[in-house]
Length: 255
Image (cartoon, rainbow, N blue to C red; front, top):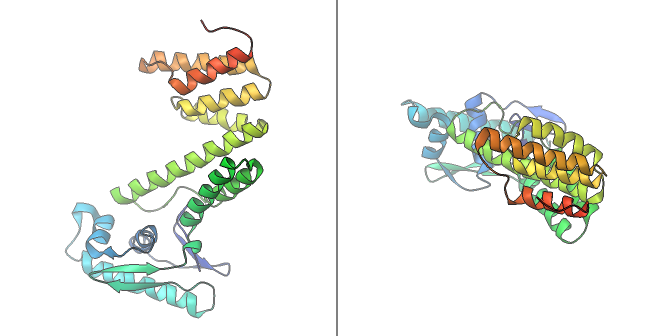
């Protein structure tokens, strides 16, 4: 049995999707999966699902959701469809017992960590392969279909992990000299997030590595102008270092 949080909430096994139920029921499952085996109190579940507007029936409703989820997991397991999973009752709360390798979030984090280690060891091709595999786990926005402050916060955290992995993949591709795809994607990314300096830094590096040095310098002038005109800021240290490095390589001096 496998669980997906990097997109719509999904439970499947043997290629068959299992019906998880209502958004609230999916929220309970997501919370238990994100807790990675930790016991979760009823109060935590109620807060995640309803915030400060919890109805009087919230505790009863939560117990019903858990009961239904147990049935889903039991039916999936009894059908011989894969890894067994189950929800245990704890002291006024619950604990989801599941193989960590069956949860896409856990696999994503483990794979990106392995990619960073491979890169540090100079295994660039392996690092690139691992990152591409990790990013392929994403099926859409994380925790898609769940609302509320708790899930918005976790979604933002997961999306930041994804953004970091994408940036690292671009950096590895540029380092290997595979700049074409990175340039195309970074051009779109800088247009979508024009004040995110790390994206411009990577774009400049990719353009320079691709033999397009003047375009790299033009990119710096563009972001410097945007920051000054729109925010009254100067480029940060990372951008300035990249600019200096490219101009030095071009045989020109800073002004």
